[in-house]
Image 1: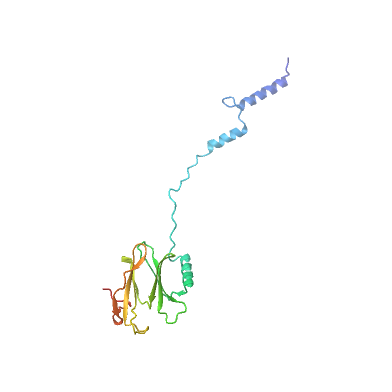
Image 2: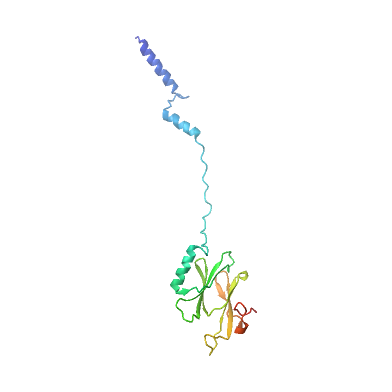
Length: 200
């Protein structure tokens, strides 16, 4: 059987092309295979993503944050209390964060003898204490306490003109503010420059 020269040339060309596409083991590498190998060779090894070892804790609400201020306004409105310009921010619990203390009166009070004292840490209410014509409030952060001076109501004395005053201390025990009971008494004439009875 004879083959024409043209046919022989076509067969030889096909064998050459087929041999060039064969791999070392005689397997045909398609264009896709060559492309994937090139990508694998040039792709850097991905680094591992660090994992969290602990659940992040919530950030305490700052006592002067807009959220806290809005909370205080709503709280006073709900209780129908007016701040009366008496507010302090002092760390009384020793945690490095200031508590917010309000001395309030009723919104529409007349003589306004009745007071309410509120102590907050952030938006948590730590103390709600009734008061009567509250005068001086002194803070003692070094011992985690504060004291309040107010009149002693004696029989027969008019509300306007008490003759005696009492200073009562409220101390932080790690969970709450507790009163140590009636404190020192003094005559009105003996009130100190800060409006409080002298400490013993």
